[in-house]
Length: 92
Length: 434
Image 1 (tube, rainbow over the protein chains, first blue to last red):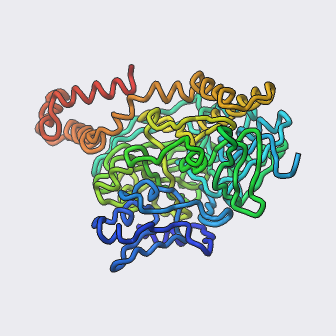
Image 2 (tube, helix red, strand yellow):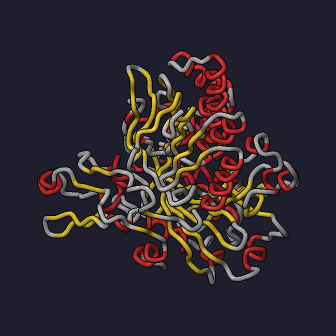
């Protein structure tokens, strides 16, 4: 059994200093979205709800884009990272 | 011509973009191929199969030059129940011979090699560059905006080959956001096996290889499937789940993958394996229903950016569609250069040619497979139904073997009624048989 954190640790990333992911309106997460499905559907566990904040571990984003279309309130602003940054597969 | 002006700008150095760049550069056009990754392939992943007959026409006997892992001579389709499985195992001598039906490849290696072929033909490759927008003049796309100093690049034609998320097609107003019913999420692990284990476990000799696709409930109720491909000395293993089911079932795809790896039919294959990499990708899966507008004045959309994926239940093909669409895009552009006309009408030729090719013909032919794949019983009922039926039938416990029809009848009604079975059978037939 391999844990997600261990898998991500062994996958190669070069994170940009600036996040390429933004929650558009945190109040939408707080007030309208009890399920926080982004914390479920992201294959890299980038999203974590902590108290009343969304922690975004953009450094470990696999850039699949599921969150762009999966958020029920279109409340995630996801862009391609700066060229040359982000995930860098060794095999792919 | 200034240094920021080209005949053609191609965004995305995957199979679609590189194919277009290669063909156009061979004809002497001034082509720039822009890639946001550190190198072509750095951002790319897929299950593992390249059906390369279409590539053979562009680079004859590509397999002797490209970094391929193994040819695929065995294709296994498995129905997966909780702790049993039933498979159709196809093994072909013809698939072991040139021009080969398909190969397992690793995208970082393959895409990189392929882009170098385009560069050798004369294309300019610009890596580590994200393109954010198109430049328009009236109804015509005349260039792109890259996220870098002096990022405005101009050309007669822009080819969007920027993958499943295509920001470029969206910026050009050619496509809308996906809904969770229109795509699946795939994740994959590459697992290194001990020397000789691959050959022994899968009965492979030399460069023989196999693909195994699994259909069933993934994790605790995800609709989708799983896959396994043999690389040279490692395995690619992954799970695909329909995005809507990820939302509805509250199950993570990485837990589903771990569960799949523990399945009694799968776990022994991974024994002693060492984890190498984890990757994820979105798969456009609504077939003909989600194909965006494929062109506008001065612009064409290709490959995954255009949703050109054949989703046929037993088929899931993307790279061959991407290569074919890149080639057809290049042919359209060459014709436009002959006439010196790059408007929307000239670009419409691309769609006409795609419709006449296997790409859109297959996607349209199998469009009735899409509702079948949305049928929840395909995942929740039938795989376990098939396995349970066979388990009961094959069991030797002194009570005797009833005839199969009697067995099926006995199990009917538990999960599915006779009429529903007939209806689903008809749906399956329409999807795949006639």
